[in-house]
Length: 263
Image 1 (cartoon, one colour):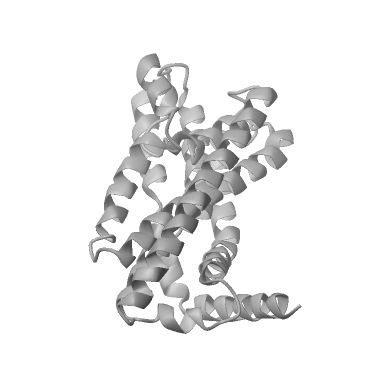
Image 2 (cartoon, rainbow, N blue to C red):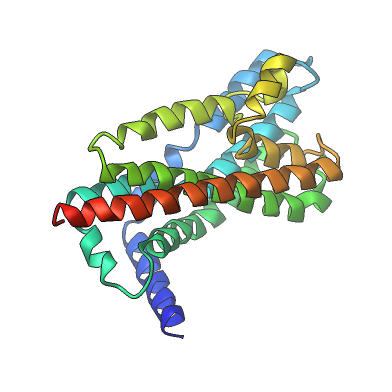
């Protein structure tokens, strides 16, 4: 019960703090508009024809869903961990009765909750204007929502593991830039992964990135059958479990070093 009360208090604080900095939340949303820019590029390239089976309306549907997925899987935990570790604020969290991990989870989920209504409205408008709203298989929405949970679990836990490297080096924050570039390309934010050569797409499938953006979109646009969609969500959970295991190991090892230097 004590932990539940602590979590409730954390959520209240997180919502109040994020609501106080609404302008910052809006800036973060603007930082995730790359898929919308790419939508116009690919729609213009397709014109009245097709590119690898994608019409202009298909590109509209793909990239608006990529925008929504990106908004709901956006995390900044690398930055938070880096600052808290370098400035010693992690010490304050260590004396609390809950794992610091839950603090970062709560704040990131609270931010997503505040972005959700705006992201949904922008997505709906984009789908309508792009001619993709009517043809969307809405019966797949629950499966799409489930895949978004899997996407968030991958993104958050991967970034948490990277952020914990700040316990060893002051250059861990540089990894965020590399992660952003790699994820933008391999996750499907710049182009549908269907456009990759078959061999390259098979290779990319062995990384976690296609399961962050491309998979939810393929589920919602019915480009994969239900069976493959369920298998994809299972793979999402496997990647999430792998990164959870990684950051738990890094936490145990790093905490010894953090305490040893008297932080």
